[in-house]
Amino acid sequence: MAVGNSLAKSQQKTGLTAYLTNDAVKNQINNVVGGKNGTRFISSIVSAVNANASLQECTNASIVSAALLGESLNLSPSPQLGQYYLVPFKDKEKGKVAQFQLGYKGYIQLAIRSGQYKKLNVLAIKEGELINFDPLNEEIEVKLIENEEAREQAETIGYYAMFEYVNGFKKAIYWSKEKMKAHAMKYSPGYAADIKKKTSWTFWSKDFDGMAYKTMLRQLISKWGIMSIDMVQAIDSDMAVINADGTKDYVETDEGNFIEQTPVEESVQEITEDVSAPVQDAGVEDDIQQNFFD
Image 1 (cartoon, rainbow, N blue to C red):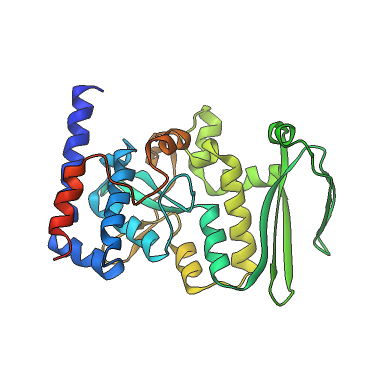
Image 2: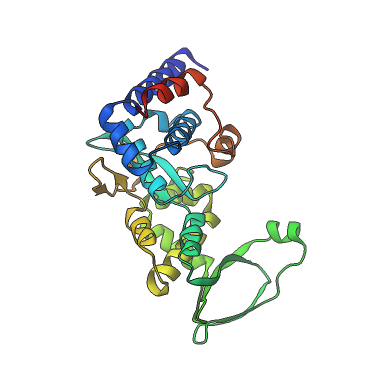
């Protein structure tokens, strides 16, 4: 690691630690977390920041506020779980900030907790699998590729999502991949710039299927699903920078706002699966434990 990068990382980590032990921030965290969960919460933040060089350059306030929202929804920032992400963006006024982005697995978790859903599924449909989708009766006929490895390698042609309530009500939608691409191009200028310049700045470029699953669940649940208070809050806060006072700024997602990030698969290797595991710098956690919950 270059000396300059090492120094920048050290300064950010020290700044974050000092920020976390500030009385006002301690009170803010205690109001949402409190008790023994505070140490786990802080460990997860420090681990996430340590594992993402771009996140280290974001303002401490935006990191903590986004993480507190995730915590209030009882969702994990662990990349392996894919429930929500802290995504670095550039803001013209505030500099580099962390944005709250809900993952498709976060939608699933919040829906399951409502107790209203008997079934909930989202699936990529591969080439040769789709026989027919009847949009009037919302019935799909497919013949799935039995060999899992062959299915994984097959080209995706569309996406299917459905839910069934415990009372028997059902809803299902199917989008072709072309429709999904058109949606991504319309609502993500960053992705449109990726396509034009053949770059990979956005989650749409890095994990198209994951973003497609999220889009399908959002379309399905927000239009026809029963939404809990937590689900409404999560959808309202998705793709937003959360301010300390609870207000939200929706960062314009054009190409100039994106910060090149560590690929998700690399981040997974660096963050332990158990978010309550000790942070790499034990001294940092010890200082926090001694100073946080007075």
